[in-house]
Image 1 (cartoon, rainbow, N blue to C red):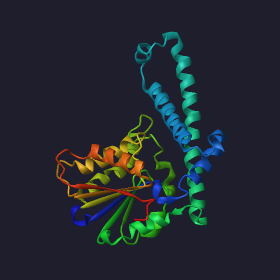
Image 2: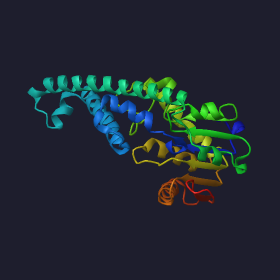
Image 3: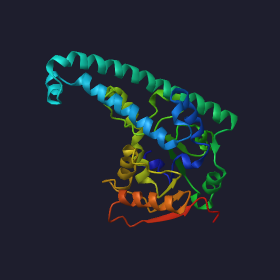
Image 4: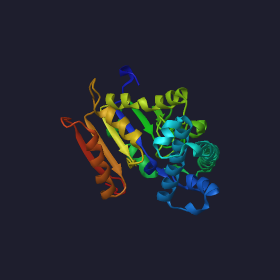
Length: 276
């Protein structure tokens, strides 16, 4: 976003803005790993393992024999170690893309059927008169529900990619800069992370249904860059909206960690499970 098109209000949106946000994702995961069930924490654990396996096998592919020997691999064992790592990497890559395609397919079906939708509470809160004026929406969700609902009235940006380009979707714990990507791929994915410019230019930020998970260091960095932009930040207010007072306080604490100490703005904490 250029300064010319700076938004008065910028929404940062997570799965808490959705009805059944995890349902299609879990359905896709269970096609490949049925032990996950409806456990979202187990799903994130499985996601992070897939990413870490690929990081490690990519590292082996780039490492010299000397590098591997420094890690304790005997010289005579290196050829087999490389073959095993290459096979594991190939199998993991296949799983990675099958998983992302399955997620995209399930989300598309859920959006079209209405099984997945923007939550009524989010729609109510987003329609509040205080957000009048130019508005932009930045989402970590892979679906296109915001695009369909608000695309004609404001910009919608996907930090983690979306289902219409599922190969570029970022999985939980995944960063734009990974050892298994080419430089071109890194640049293409990293371009979506430049939303910190839009964050710094908005007068108010509404963080809705976003957990700021420790798995998502890239998101924390993007928000932090926007709030602590060396060129200056226009942000005067931040609204934290989530379900339950404990969750709201937890997210607000993490946001305060991202704000510069001298930031003069105000953070408002709102429980969106409350009808107030």
